[in-house]
Length: 214
Image (cartoon, rainbow, N blue to C red; front, side, top):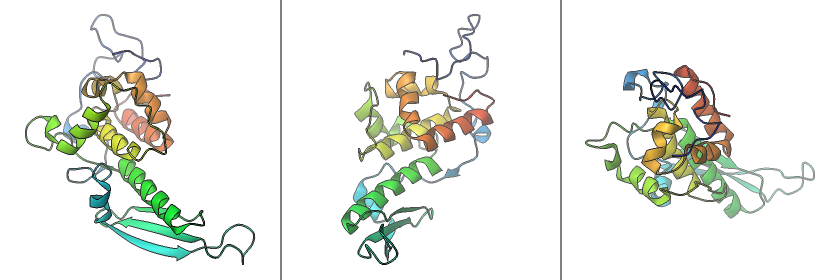
């Protein structure tokens, strides 16, 4: 896998062949050493099919004033999706179309879930790859440059599985890249596109005594 000077870039320890620059950083932490997180059962809610996730959510519409003053654009209707198992909410109120707000609110909820909750990659029986939902997303994007547009409905699902893997790996892209058959620089680039995701990974890295990704 190729490296990038932004991923796990301390200086390479030639004596030990260490890719991450210090003796402890090339192994996965024990489960009880991981960064504290809200853990939900498999599969990750952001990675499941849209219809399945919708069945776990409640929808609420709320009329909001739009641009142009207190009494204008009253027809703009905000949509709020609440994920019942976790209480996380995705909302969109800025568009005139209720349909557009509904779609935007749902995608925001999926991304919020992708970042805010974790599923344990080691909790399934047998190899990690036996989580069929996570495996499907890894297989779909294996060998790709992970250049996923923010408008792509798959982004939240990919981010959820990738963040689960990074959480399990102590925030080390070099330990995750082989599972995805991608470069570490592709992983870091994808994280950069979602600042909240990058912030989470850096919190994980700090928890394990590693330098932040940039």
